[in-house]
Amino acid sequence: MTIKDISTLLNCSVLCCEERLGSDVHMACGSDMMSDVLAFVKDQAVLLTGLLNPQVVRTAEMMDIICIVFVRGKTPGQDVVELAREKGVVILSTKERMYEACGKLYESGLKGRKEP
Amino acid sequence: MSIVLKHEIPGDDFSRAGEASSAVKNKLKQMGIPPEVIRNVSIAAYEGEINAVIHANGGEITVTVDPDAIVIVISDTGNGIPDIELAMQEGYTTASDNIRALGFGAGMGLPNMKKYADEFDIRSEAGKGTVITMKIYMKRPKD
Ligand SMILES: Nc1ncnc2c1ncn2[C@@H]1O[C@H](COP(=O)(O)OP(=O)(O)OP(=O)(O)O)[C@@H](O)[C@H]1O
Ligand SMILES: [Mg+2]
Image 1: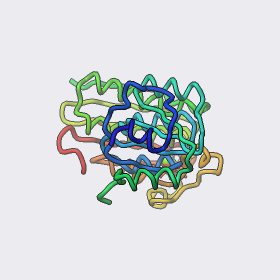
Image 2 (image 1 turned 135 degrees about the vertical axis):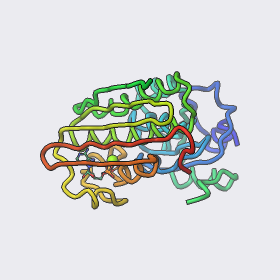
Image 3 (image 1 turned 90 degrees about the vertical axis):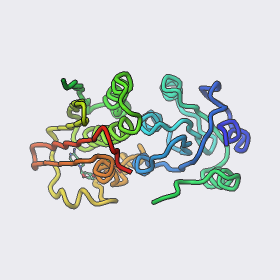
């Protein structure tokens, strides 16, 4: 699945790094707790979250997460978008709530982390 | 032939938490360190940096790059950790609801650091501060 597919499935607005929508995504992680996200390391992951601070982008940066989807129609501040742009992290925003957003992606074949 | 990177971790502005680890990550990328090694170093450094900010009012990070390993030392002069064994348990946290609202305080940071580092050492003294030393090998990255 590509970031573009995620954007279409969840009817997202793209807030930055539009040029990277064609990138492949292999798995997803949904959480508002960044330390839970940091326990999960895999390549080409997307992070779904309702948290809006710069540490969401920092966490993505540290883990090489290539896309963040903000759920419940939330849009982060300009500082957060700028930081993401600088780091090359695609920012999407969807009206879906966390549970539905994760469910839709899972149903379409985007799984979570396989091994414990 | 080691290269030493040193950064202050300011304790008064949570929105800047992570800047030191980000600077380290950029430098390691420029140096051509293998990506899995960089990721393990980044995550371990970042968890330590966040802890220094939220639990100790800031501190300092020193990263030493040697041909065979990277050593991260995160030190602070905060209140220290009274019971290290307890603090190392997954899920143990003393973080306030304010911290949790910022996305931290799951009690996962120290266990994560131990997991991502090949060698992990923590020393803490009540009222004096905490020093965490982590070594990540250039070859044979964990998992
Ligand atoms: N540098 C430090 N100074 C003082 N206390 C610390 C320090 N680092 C950790 N602690 C104590 O150890 C506990 C566990 O730390 P740990 O990083 O595992 O979890 P956390 O920071 O509470 O939450 P998370 O890391 O999931 O965001 C903390 O809640 C705190 O009480
Ligand atoms: Mg922590």
